[in-house]
Image (cartoon, rainbow, N blue to C red; front, side):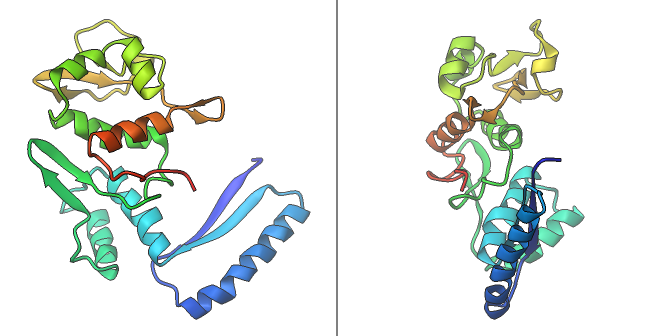
Length: 212
């Protein structure tokens, strides 16, 4: 392993303790670097824990059943940060979307964002049938999402199954498969395209999901 991001996470750390820990992280990073390790250590706590860990968990969990142990734990954490403030809202004719503060999506890989927020938005039938048809074309998908394959294929179509997620979903009464070919490397970064489309279509607040 050439690189690792080591995170020490806690929902609540006293500010005085946190102030003492921060210099320790710098010292630890220097020790690792001096010994030839390309590891970076950091602390995620308090408000950062809420924005960078808790909310991405709720997004990645795709809503989570209210009988789920994970949800109950997450709900308890939400209450620690003022759970009376809703982190979801329902729009007319649209599925629930998690309203993220800036950087709330930064810890999520692009594929997970596509499989949750993008998939849910499409499945809510809030996107016009005309645009859904355009998403079946390579040209529109490339221009809008930066990907090299049609974003959607009908379940009845012939297509390269390796390029699509295995679980189908329904949009406007038809069953589709969603493209899985998402990249976020310097030479091919689709993240900005996906975030821009989600912001435009109200799935996330403008400015969310940018990497730090």
